[in-house]
Image (tube, rainbow, N blue to C red; front, top):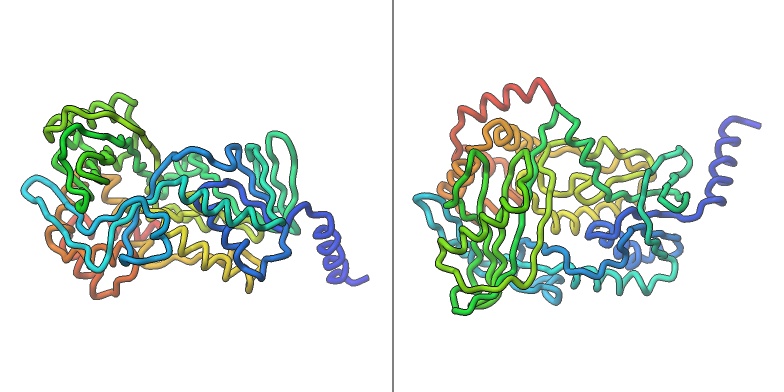
Length: 398
């Protein structure tokens, strides 16, 4: 018997023994996006799928996602609120920006979870398991997923579980963390303009970091007020809370109740996440580098990358071939290198960008839809010395 025939028989035998075609580790935004996409595409109709998550299906409004896009879209039925204008504040600048024809939109997580679960529930080939994933191994012919309570085999794995240790122990690509706490508040007086979101307010103390407030009003007396940092280290809980209280007091807001809270941590790094991918395992969501490294925005990237990934899966069998670096990865890498070494300059850098550029061009650039000429224009708005030094160092360490 020839070697190739033996390998074919071994491959077919392993496939016959597999529990599932696809296992999705994690039932958050990216995992649900993949599961929904698989459910809606007839190409995957007969594929047996397992979603593993210790809290599946999620039953808490544990986060919000914001993004900018055209006024009308498929997300409108789930949109909690949208804003026509955003405000950028920093010492010496208070810029009100009209987003037309775009809108800044917010989705609450439960509306997204519920819609995705409704789609998934119609697919009898999708099962779910409340369990914690301990390890995922590519065995060449198939994958093994070990949980606290079992071992499962599949042809492919979509893994959304972020390995923070991998990022923190890596010295080649420095790690900043976008960390935040937000309070949903209701005031006694009418204070807010529900059509105007404060995108970044750098008027607060920086304490040698990059720190800003983020205010999203839903009505004249309701808003999300969020304290956000781009830094190497987290704060203790009082650090976030005291900063929000101080900001509200300085804004003349004293009589309010807290109706809900959210908090989170998002990696900001140029780490080449795609190198984790093997033939049969692909990392998705923040674990796959789907969060925009320089801003932390994730939701629209999940939407775009889920579609391209499923399209790729129809034509290819090797996940190592899926993702490629782009020039935007390099832009983010250089910006983060500068911010990591000079975290106190964050306010200055963002102020230069918003002060010297058309905001619509900035959002186009952040969406990675700009052309080279537009990108040069944005880059020229920064103090060039520190960036040129950083580029020179990084070119010898890619």
